[in-house]
Length: 238
Image 1 (spheres, rainbow, N blue to C red):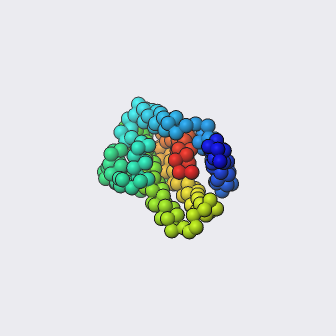
Image 2 (tube, one colour):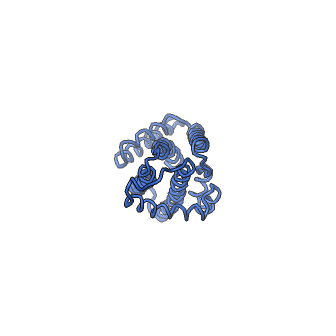
Image 3 (tube, helix red, strand yellow):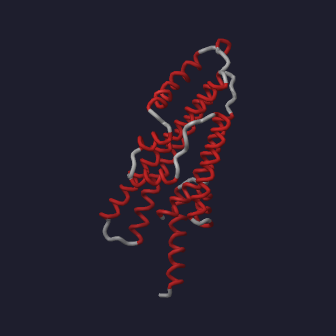
């Protein structure tokens, strides 16, 4: 069989796998598939890095945010099990002290709901920055934990495939589809967590009559990066 025929068959198979996956995933994943099919790996990685740097710069300038977003290299290291979530969090500036403050915000959120608006003080710029900082730190911690969980799932699919017999295209498709469904469930779970984190800090700031645009904008960044991240890992593993 000629080389170009093999390449064409490989592309058709990949498209069939992707089409099957999209049937299970949310419709928004079409954008990730489109990026994967039309953009080379280096460009996807560069797009992710550009968005990471843009987000870090905006948060640093507007809200003096000290923590930084995990890089593609750190995410890959978590996927491969080369580093622990705690190691990555520490390198991003998410220390034990920051994690304690994050836990304290649960009580803060509860108290602000119970306190009458007329009894609440006006937040200073520094206090607003503090809550944005904690929101960002909690979101980044969530992202780090997600990549670690995906790393465990990666080990799971590799172990399952090693024990699969016979190893055919049909059994490969079945294995991929079964694990893609698990990844989809995880995505829904993480989307819910991200929304809850943003809603918590939005509620705290709003209860004091403070500007919530900083934390609200983080959801847009999350969605923007997610499509590129999916495209990158679909390209890497499918």
